Image 1 (cartoon, rainbow, N blue to C red):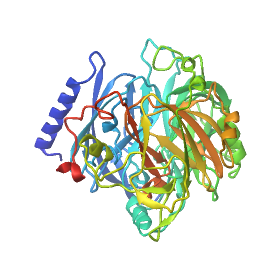
Image 2 (image 1 turned 90 degrees about the vertical axis):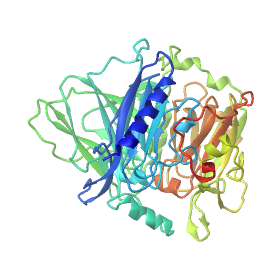
Image 3 (image 1 turned 90 degrees about the horizontal axis):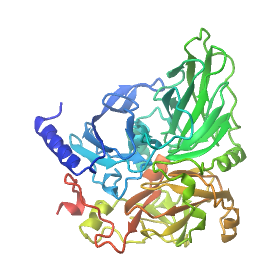
Image 4 (image 1 turned 60 degrees about the vertical axis):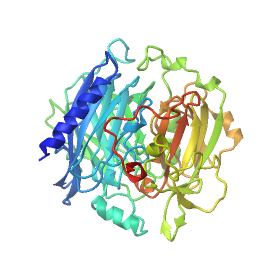
Length: 537
């Protein structure tokens, strides 16, 4: 049970935070207790991270511009941070929940997150960012709705359903972590969970003759997944805060960390149907199974599973990715249509090419970006920047291009200037499909292709209606190009969404500075800021 003094302190902090909330914008409070529970998602008893006793955790549902206040108590036996995957926390990387921006919440400690879902709508997720904890759960969905004055580019659905899919290990995350710390590699998971349950453990009940919005997020650790529903086509309408050009799909590849919204119509004969989530690109195939149950059904699922793309068929995924485009006429969280931002006409200020690699450093397996494997320096970079603490990191310490240097461990930081327009190429010279995410931003996925990126690859770019999102895949021995306007000052995490690769160093931070602001990147520091490392002095 939480101690009264801690709860009182948390309540006082929450009240103080509300006082600084933007005038006129609603706010909402949540109390979350993060703890271990014993459960058996794949038939083996193990410790799973739950929030308020729930696995998956409670859905965070809000409306754009609302102020969200979450008092979080860490009842684990290890440090904790939650990160808000895909939320563009405007000028507030203090709330980002990564080790470069926040000190960890220690066991038995409370900390209050406070952020505004400013000018955002869509489907996102949250999960723990430390110590391989995402492989133990602690994740949940995020829904951000439009304000009533902003139209939605499709008829209101009868209901909305959240579908969290992800690969899962039968081993506790502490066992997986110990293996990685010894320099051993761990393979893909042992199965696929749908809404936290193994095969046939989840049932989505629907009424016949209705339209439902399914909010799908891949909250797993390693595997890209193909999602499909027997006998039903899916109309894609949104991904990570962007309305998409509406198109029908029989199945949809959802890579680690990605989110989509699809519409389905329950117009089939009254029976039960398979819901499938199966792994891609490597054998053996992992299979997750749930059930779509019509309320007038008297027939259980039976027969063969609905077929998806062949496991190793990358061309299918490449071609599908190129069909996902921006809906130029739809309004976003603001009244202006998405297409009013003509990203293809903006001059590129800086080009950065980021190559992932898997070197051995000091005799152990690590993962690197442009030769640097990220190693936490003990003091969050954001705190070091705010308090002008030397010896923690150097701005622009990651090269803009791979330079052939011998791999090493370090606190790598990429520098960017506020309001500049950056082109980033993710170059994957390895066989596993990569999945990359940038906190605090949505970016335009302008191109992807096989082999090495060159300047002539720009001739293939989509400069009109490329979709904007926060997580993108990079296929085997291929490249993916993105463009983003650096409109969000702060220190932002850029990471592999593969939890094993991130744990072993495949991440860095992007420091976006406003040279006209005397505070540089530093927003007002939260009253409840946690101090650690050199900042404790």
